[in-house]
Length: 195
View 1 (cartoon, rainbow, N blue to C red):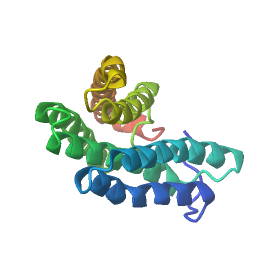
View 2: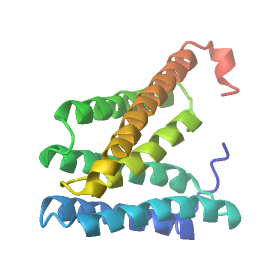
View 3: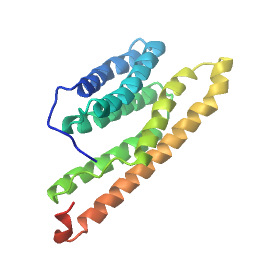
């Protein structure tokens, strides 16, 4: 994957920064006034700008190293914020959040090991992208199905299906990442020069 330039102030990066700025607002909406409608609107806007910043980076040739780091960081923060709020509001059990966060911590431990060995982080996989896609659909759906309405009853299985698929794919992509790290660290020094 091309890492891009060292530019920071690009249109895609500004969209990612706006997404990051929305995380505390999103968390407050869920936990403070419990304004699920506004929280949902913010989550949908975040998903739209997530798609848009990637498209604009390619269309405008504004891919940057900063953006490559910033975009997934914003995704992770929305996931963490949502998991925290959902556990506190008893929408999801604690063990689900702990499994997903544990996966993030394990993958996070791989980064300094790879850097110390002279490697860049492995590229994002389609499994990882699919996991984020499923989770980003699961979260708003889980908000929508709170309550006892007929619509909530109809969409509840769909919401939990997205959550299960997103969780499984999230764990699978983590396992792939750890496997890539172990393989890279076991590569002889001569093989590292080309990595």
